[in-house]
Image (cartoon, rainbow, N blue to C red):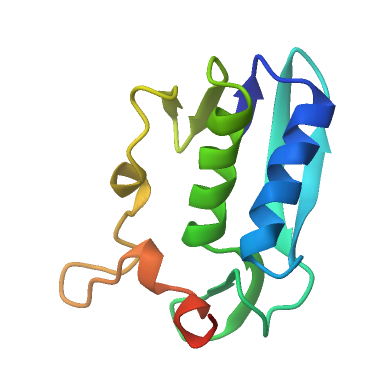
Amino acid sequence: MKIRNMSKEEIEQALEETNKKFNDNIIFKKLIEGKTFTVTLKVKDSRQKGSRIGSKGQRMCAACWHAHNAFIKNIFKIKPDAIVISLKHKIDKKTYDADDFDINMGNTSDPIRLSKMCNCKNFK
């Protein structure tokens, strides 16, 4: 995702807040500075909360939909005028709707929403 109108420290603060819900398991895979920051989230441990599950049931190091959703909400909580570009959508605090990003990762005969491709339900 791309993030505008934030400092590196504010983006790191958003991750810190996110990790309160995900047991400190979410980290940056990529954090490239510039006028627009490029950010990719991943997990430390694919067996823990916040990790994504692949279409064939395999554990992945990618952060899940819930972790991304929490991170984006924290971005807007910290910096209400921030702009996030994700899945080719430009979003701000007023237009953000997490359901817009809960896309079908399966196919028409075997659909599965991105929000279901994680192990978050196994943790409190």
